[in-house]
Length: 112
Length: 115
Image (cartoon, rainbow over the protein chains, first blue to last red):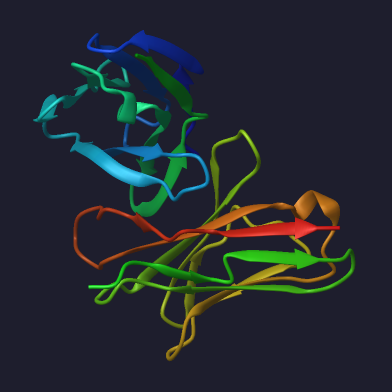
């Protein structure tokens, strides 16, 4: 089955700077890679996703890049704000099976 | 359009009791997934269901855990004879049926505490 690794586990960034979180996956057949944000005690919420037919996707301050050859994908948050503080999870699907395998999460702290 | 609903939000059980967790998918969604999240950890897949069918239960413990998604009503995750190690947040997610992998939307979770 799929295995997803996520780094770093914690990240502190000065407000206004950029944050980058990286994930690798093991199954070259995976074709869907979502990112979820989870605030303390809340549900995971989708912030952006990418399919394997594109290499990059952007939505305002958030972007995701995908390198299928190297089997890794990254989340980029620019101009960080205090409300970006949360735990972020990457995930990859099992091709032909819609279940998601999640990374272990990155706790992002934005320092005012 | 209501989102994914889960109840109860908090559940306290003593060891040996049964826990029943309910999930109502978003309107128009017929795929349901259950995930477990231990404190300070990620989400672990448990089971994937469609109406009246279990599609993938590879993440379910072999004993005490079962899930169903009947033709009418919510999906139910049932844990029999709970133990302290079952204490966790249980999230359900739902998605539509299409040819492509669809976005999974999560419910607010049920936080189970076993005393």
